[in-house]
Length: 297
Image 1 (cartoon, one colour):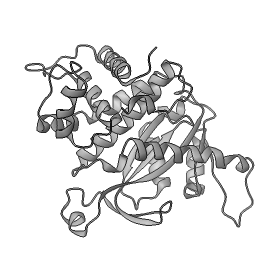
Image 2 (cartoon, helix red, strand yellow):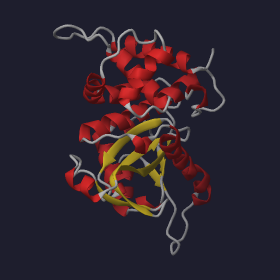
Image 3 (cartoon, helix red, strand yellow):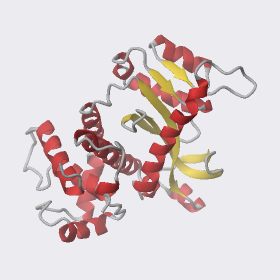
Image 4 (spheres, one colour):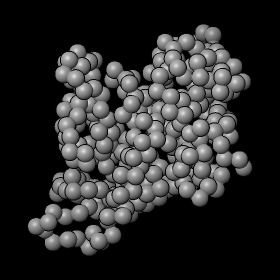
């Protein structure tokens, strides 16, 4: 099967359309269906067009006939915001449709999602009270925004994710994410989660042990290494690689959103694009599961 953007978008549209079916809706049906909306959103991220207005001008010239109707920029933005729950459901549906979903090994980490830089922005933004100041150890810098907490498989397939204020403890967020969707771990006996030193906590270990989950992370330098720690480094680098894909190729920090629902929708848009690429690469037997090269032009 040809592995290019048009093939991916066609496969994604058909999969979402079949999955959604004909849902009852009051009033006239929208001229841009939900399946078309999500396909359009994925294409925008894969092609790296940040501006919604510019994207809606780009589509007719570069993807002629792909979308019979395109809304205006305001309508497109409103539809994306309303589609946040649908984004989450489709991400899960595509992830479950791959053989990677049942992987008994997870990798967990968090990464900054900057939402502004100037002091006036931090004061006036509608994100004030949710977004906050945090420190990024990887780049030795402070930022104002949120943190994306991502749990994925070693191949990069997103399992679950959350956005949180940067000063909330990573361990608390991990426990909250698992409590929010307990079936995720209940369906995987013997699950192993690999994380960094920021997840060291007796409380977290006990919480996970009650659910039959084992957490493996490096010990502090003044502690005796635990069995298996020597194998952690190459596996922990996988989550860094996934974050690099989200930021370097899918422009995670260039989301441009100014409201809570906007940030959620645009981050979900990028996670859906990553999930779609992995799902399609897996279905077409591509040698590199997380490669986006065939779809970014």
